[in-house]
Length: 121
Image (cartoon, rainbow, N blue to C red):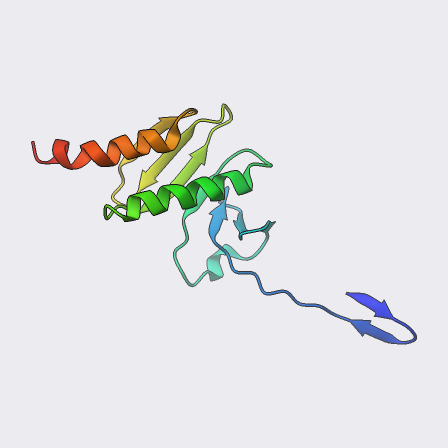
């Protein structure tokens, strides 16, 4: 909101498109974290957790993980970036994966490559 001379107020409203829930308290879009009432969400959103300042890193990693996993009919429910910057994720079926700090997407690809083989034995 700003005042325009001489006697007008200009109000700019920007609609937010949430991409995920951040630290169970806020929402995150492709650019920033913002506050909104979570109980009014219409769609189920993924849940991202991480230290302050890592919001965009978490969102980018979630996007990369989701793209890789969707090709194999998996879906990401939650992603954590720990204080030690290690990645962990929960799939929609409840399976929890600890991916560590290094070569995260390679480790996830290894899971995708091996899981169907392990599931049939």
